[in-house]
Length: 338
Image (cartoon, rainbow, N blue to C red; front, side):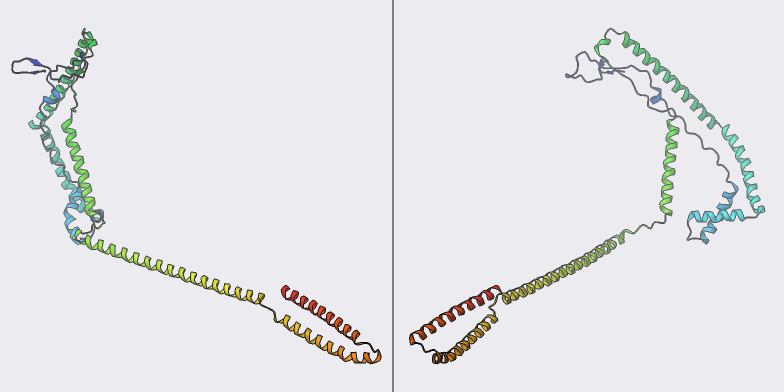
C-alpha cells in the first residue's frame, strides 16, 4: 500500500528526481497479504521414540571401556577392529542373548511408534503442514492472478506509452524453509564434528607454541653455520686462484729472462773474429820475414840499383796492405753475418 501522511493522503513512496524523464512515474503493484512472509511458522515436529540398538552395538557398548583401558595406546578405529573381531569370535549362545534383547526392544519400539503417530501432537503437526501447503498454494494462485490483472491493466491503459514500470514483490521463501534449514544445520554439524575428530585422531603432532622460539633459533643457527661454511669455501677458492696467478706470473718472468739472455748471446761480439785476425797478422808477418830473407840472395845474383829495390819494396807493401784490407773486410762480413 502507498504511504500515507497524517492527513490520510496517499504519498508516492519513490523519491522524485530532476534527472529522469518527466513522463516516468514508477508505481508499486498493490498486493494483498503476502502469505509467504506473514504466515506463522509451522509447529516443530515432536520428538519420535529412539530406535533400539542392534546386537553388535549393544556388545560394543558393553566391552568398549574394558578394551580401551587394555589398549590405551591404540587409535579409535584400531579399537573398533578389535571389538569387531571379538564379536565375530563370540559364542553363538552369547550372541543370541543380545539378539533376544534387540527383538524385545524392537517390539516395544513398534508399539511406541504407533502411539507416537496417533498422538495429538503429531496429528496437529501433520495438520499444520497441510494447512501451510494449502495456504502457500492459495497465495501463489492469488499472486499469479494479481500479476495477470496488473499486466492487463497496464496493457489497456491509455498511458502505457509513458514508459511506466511496475515493481513486483519477490517470493523467495521456500515452501519447506524450516525443514531445509534444519537439514543444512545438521549437515554442517556433521561435517564439523568429522573434521574435529579427524584433527584429534590424526598422527600429525602439533608443536607447542612455547617451543616455537627455540625452533626458530635452531633454524637460524643452522643457517648461520651453512653460510659460514659457504664463506670458507669461497675464500679457499679465491686463495687457489691467487696462487695459480702467481705461478703463471713467475713462469712468464722466467721465460722472459731466458729469452733476453739468449738474445744477448746471439748479438754479442764474437771472439772468433779477433782470433782469426790475430792469426792472419802473424802469418803475414812471418811471410814478410821470409820474403826479406830471400831478397839478399836475389841481389847477389841479379844486382840492381837501389831505386829498383825501393820500388819493389813499396809495391810489395802496397799489395800486402791491399790484401790485408781485403781479409779484414771479409772477416767483418763474416762477423756481421753471424
